[in-house]
Image (cartoon, rainbow, N blue to C red; front, side, top):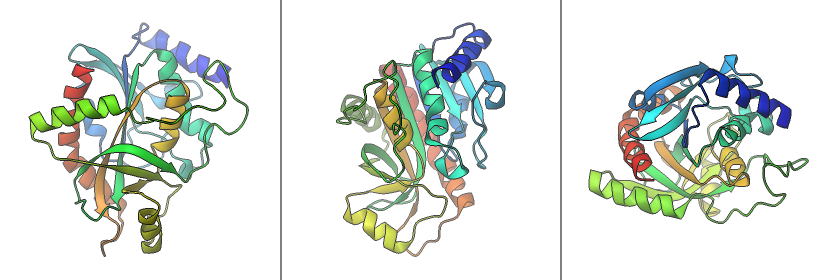
Length: 268
């Protein structure tokens, strides 16, 4: 694994003149437009990077974008990988390992998710305060001690300090925020009504098919995480799940999320 990670890191450093990003950003379904906020210096398709998986999901462009937001050097994953695509958890989280070794000090994650909390509305932005993992843990297997400890602590897995900054910025920008616990599931089916009731009973506020593995691996490597879910449907209503509508709602909310991310990145 370390050899494969090193090959990807070395290729990227060569292709970007050792750009050394400070902030990594993972853009979820329908949220790829955030890349327009970046003053792009380099763009690398995933298929050009040694050992990198290739996204198969509509709405995920499939490239790494290096550039600046204000004075900050950033790298954005325009498209992520999911367990339901048939990838192993090590493949799903491979890019996070690469970004950490490229030098990121913070990881921002975003996703489109189904609302469990009945006070949420379609289009809301939910700051992730914690998660419940119903996916295989990406750290199962031999531990690579050079990357992190065998038993990483998951207190504050979504940084409270960054959440507090985001709250203050959102108030100044007039952006309404929700807060809650994200439930990570395998997909690719949208959830049944019984599953939504179960997720609510165990403490979930939103549910989706990503984010948790990436957060676990980032925390394993000591990288603070800030996460945002765009609520694209309300699961306990009679509304049916539809991937095209998820992309549409993601794009609608994406501008507010982009404004929040841009201001927050500048103030880290």
